[in-house]
Amino acid sequence: MATAERTWTVSPIGSVSSPRGEATDNEWGTIRASITLLPPFDGSPLRGLEEFSHVEVIYLFDRVDPSSVCLHARRPRGNPSWPEIGIAQRAKDRPNRLGLSTCELLGVEDRTIHVRGLDAVDGTPVLDVKPYLQEFAPRGSIRRAAWSTELMANYF
Image (cartoon, rainbow, N blue to C red; front, side, top):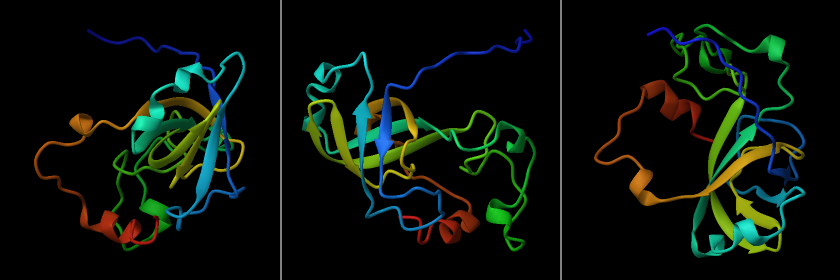
């Protein structure tokens, strides 16, 4: 059965406050940021979140021009020594411009979540926050492309 093209509408639930105003490719591990829920949300949706050590944050790369989205294979970070690949990279100019980051949860205060290691810049719209549950992590051993180890060496 062929699938028809569909459009989904999502609205941000919060906004990132971060000392980083520009997306860079390295050294996100020590960055402390916060996510504040937007109206009409109060702090009640965050109740119980402080019991977790980590959260998964889904956000929108809102500063990426939709016309610059890459629909084809390319070399990660334009590095000619790495292979040309497609969706196997986590670049910001993806078709739907969605970001996903697993962050250390530092605390919850009213409508604000404090985290470390969120690779989103100041003002980024947050679409969802989920507690990290180990049961959703990969089971068994994992494998990854050799070039990705080099690419991520200084990211966090």
